[in-house]
Length: 146
Image (tube, rainbow, N blue to C red; front, top):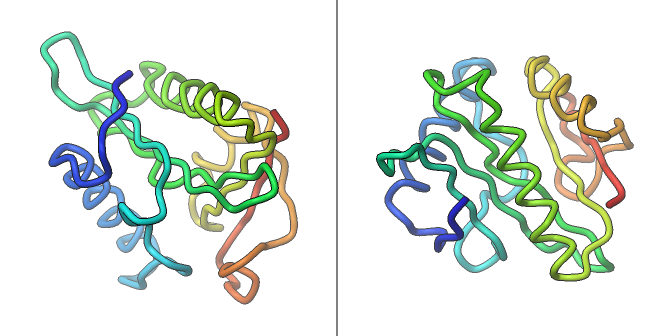
């Protein structure tokens, strides 16, 4: 796992691919909330294969009071089912602990059943929508205490 800046070319490509997939599920609609940026993302991780090809990514945005939001978790379709998501999430959890954060929150969509199942298998539970997602009918928010 490699920590990189938000503007890393691989991260930008992966996150654009992630957003393209999300928009396709939601009839072209953009995600709710503020898009992550270099100004508000504290941790960005990239998983690579042995030849250095970027396979997946994830990021953390500090929300305050020991809470961080998981952003832009994504694995390229060809690498799915190989444990990349699990490795990225585990590394994000380690990074959160290193910073003293005790809770991870995230927002996913009601049409993203695989994502909801993945997070539930890794200890996240559905919680009331928070922050910019409160009024988003398609948002499903989840949380895990570390």
